[in-house]
Image (cartoon, rainbow, N blue to C red):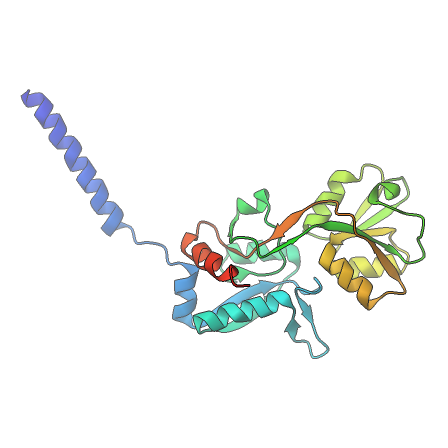
Length: 246
C-alpha cells in the first residue's frame, strides 16, 4: 500500500510539473494579429497580374479585389497596409520566413499548400478554364488541344499550372512567369492555349476581345483563401469572422 501511495505521489508531481512548465516555462507564440496591431502595419504579399484580384494601374499602384480586401483588413485593425510584390511561387516562402504577414493573392486552398501555411475560410469560389486565340474557332474544350505539337501556357506556381501538367498527356505544358506573360505568348502565336482561373480569363478577354476567347466550362472547382503562418489559429479565427462580411 505504501509503495502504491508513493507511485501515485510521484505521478501527481510529474503532472503538476508538466502543467507548470506549459504555462510558465514556454511562452505562447505571438499571433500575426497581435504582431500587426503592435507594429501598426500589415505587410501583405501579392502577385500582380491576376485580373481582377491584383493588378497595377498606369501609375504603378496596386489595385483589385484582393488589394481592397487587404485595405479593409487594415482599416478594421486600425493599421496601415504595405504591399510586397512576388512571383506567385515566391509568396509561401516569403510568408514562412516572416517577410510578409499574410498572402492575399487569389491563392487556391490546396492540401499541399496547407502543409506549409494555414488558410482562413474561402472568400471566393472559382475554377480553371481554357483561353484560346480568337482565330481558333475549332477548339471546343481542353481535350481538343491534348495532341503532340500543341503548347499550353501556364503561370508558374499556380493551380492552373499543376492541373495542366496532370491532365495534358500529349501536349507540351510551358511555364511562364505570370498570367500576362502566358497570355502574351498565346497572342503572339507561341502557345495554343492558356489554362488559368476563370475570373482572370474573363477579365483578359474583356480587355482584349479581338485577340482571345475563353472556353468557360470549368476544368476544376476551387476556393480562394487568405494564407497566414502555419498553425496561427488566432489569426485564422479573426479572418474567418472578417471574411463573413466580404
